[in-house]
Image 1: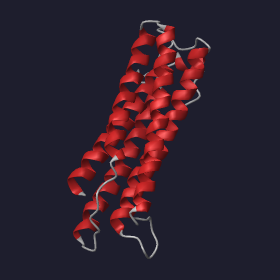
Image 2: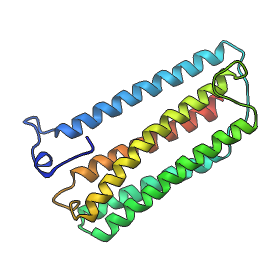
Image 3: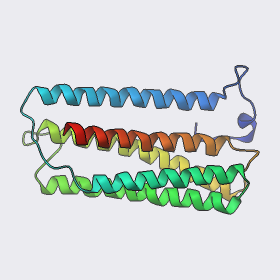
Image 4: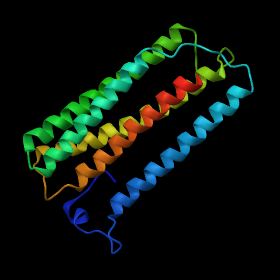
Length: 196
């Protein structure tokens, strides 16, 4: 999905859907199903009792703002590519990468705050509520890392002048995936606020 050459980019299938777009949507659907299972399990387990109530780390709200801003910069890069504004493409992708890295650092700091409050993952001293929080944020963080790799590959392509109005597939796929990760985080944050 990530490594896209010009030959593949210009050859959509007879159905009109590019194979890479189809693959990306399959990946997105599988991630949605996984998080639907996680959040359903969260609700079921919470109702069983023995559920520790604690304050969510403050950084999660800050991270929500960061990921929304990163979606704005990603969209700016995509719109710039459609207009052949090469310097804005690069700047938008760089800003998206920096904001994505800041989000991951924030998640790490959130975990550190949990540990300071004696909320751990797994083990005899942990509570399922803490473990669920680690899993939800950790699995999302893993997918954000894959998104960052995709953004960086797209950035390298833009530095080689391979991202422009006649070659949009790479940045289009990257934008869709990045917006999906942002939307997924908003869902998780709202879910945790309502159900925590």
